[in-house]
Length: 116
Image 1: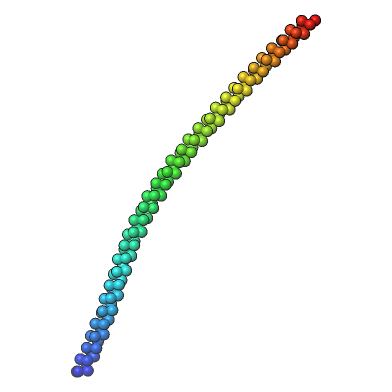
Image 2: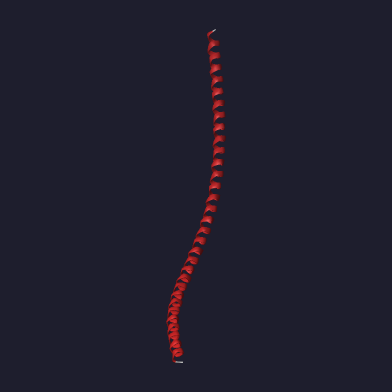
């Protein structure tokens, strides 16, 4: 009987030791779990900030694209206007040159006619 008693005490002591080890492991795991939860919360917060920043950048990119499109249209309009002005100027110059040549021709005819 005493042998059973000693075996039971030894088993009890082993179980106490094992229980302490398991409690220490559980405590360590609980601490690690809390750290991981905090890290996960921080990562979720950073992820949300990044998504917000990305959305803001997409919005700015759209606005920039629209602005660039408007500027391109303005440049096109200005180029068309400049082309029109150059064509008008060229037509006036040609007209003035033709009038001068006609005057020179008349003047020459008048001078040559007077000499005869």
